[in-house]
Image (tube, rainbow, N blue to C red; front, side, top):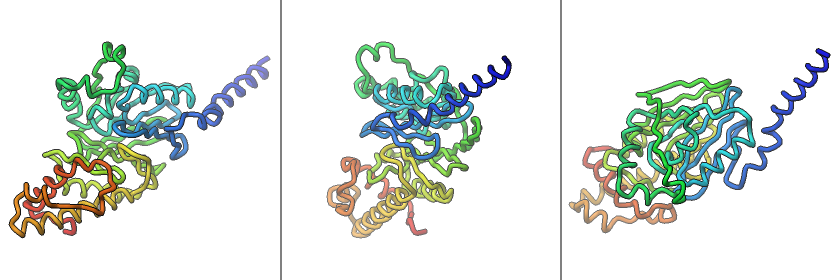
Length: 305
């Protein structure tokens, strides 16, 4: 009798272990498996990438997305992949396109973010146009709850979940008020937030500097990741950092030349052209890019230094 029970137990365990293999191929068109037990959901703008990381102790999510459909797709994918619960949700940034769906996962998931994320999320939630900016059905919106991080780290944080190690690193002044890069050293997978997005212009806010952006690229590239998942777009490699650095270098060179010619910032915004990057998305963000380059030039910064 004992032998038969043991056999049944082993069969059940074997089946549970095989479930991810059976169902991982049917997560939907938006999902891509980038490594063993690591899946990325990447849809079009304005949604962010949402990632699922399986461990023996449970699931770790990275960002929760913007659209209600993002949360539904991720939740359904998790159920297909594993019977284990979602243990943690790590934010790469606090903006609504990355955090709107927190309420779909927490509780029970513990949300972790860089210092300042809670304040940023509360400001966005209090904005008069918040409800019109989030993509949520009216019925769901009436029950919507802002769920902010339960844990905020200051500079760095190491999280061990099951067999995996997550190294969280704060990226200062690169996109939002609280950007986080997430490094999985054993898997050599890097979640790089929105410091750079493939072939896209960033909306560079007044506290963000090109200097800090490029320094962040260098730091992340030095980790030698095999796969880079940015806050938007398809997973790629460090090529995204290199291409974005080349763009900023050329932008600063052209702004510097125009400053030396005695032109004002407004004149530069009217006259400067970057035809090499006209195919990149977000062309309406060019004025904020020129503003950041102008500040860099006035500070005496040169990317080659």
